[in-house]
Length: 239
Image (cartoon, rainbow, N blue to C red; front, top):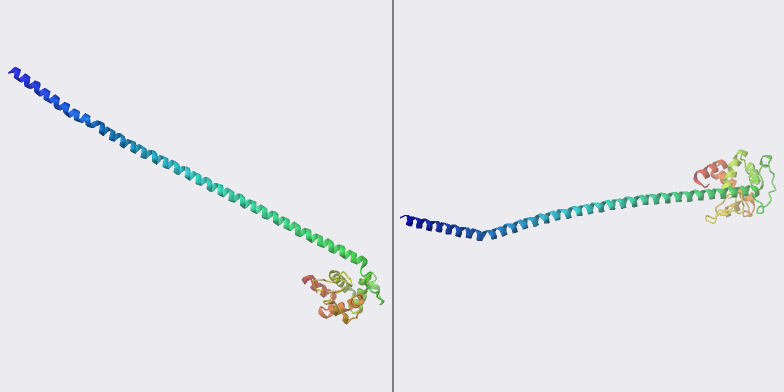
């Protein structure tokens, strides 16, 4: 009996060990495949994580590049605006200087012309005036002296002569041959056309007395007095 149970025990033990071995073999045979699948899944997950990290990095780099480009464009626009403003200011300054220079040159030329006229008005181009010269006109000379005498003869007071003097200084500098090529005005009073002065004499082109008589008649008929004519000339630039 003891031997029989001993044999049965040995067999049972052997079968148990065999079953365990089979089961263990089956498990051990399947475990490498499972482990490989797990490792591959981990690699995929890691690759996805790496790719996501790379995408985030590239996105950050692109955002930084765009921000730098916008800043560069803003800086360039601000610089261009500053340069344009400076150029415009410089152009305005140059233009103002040119205008001021031109005005100064014009004023100097007018003053020079007036001084020359005052020193030699009517000389070499006017016929002598043989009428009487009042004592109040002795301070003047040339065509101005004739103009003063004829103005008093026409009935105006001596205080009107400063206005007449300034008016015809502006118009012709008291030159009998003064001619405006643009308008065609002629003579001391700048009659337009000059032939109008023919109503005072056929020598209207050369005789200052003829021109002055016509001019005084024009002033009296249109403005009333030399000073009224001068005020109109001051406000409009013509009379």
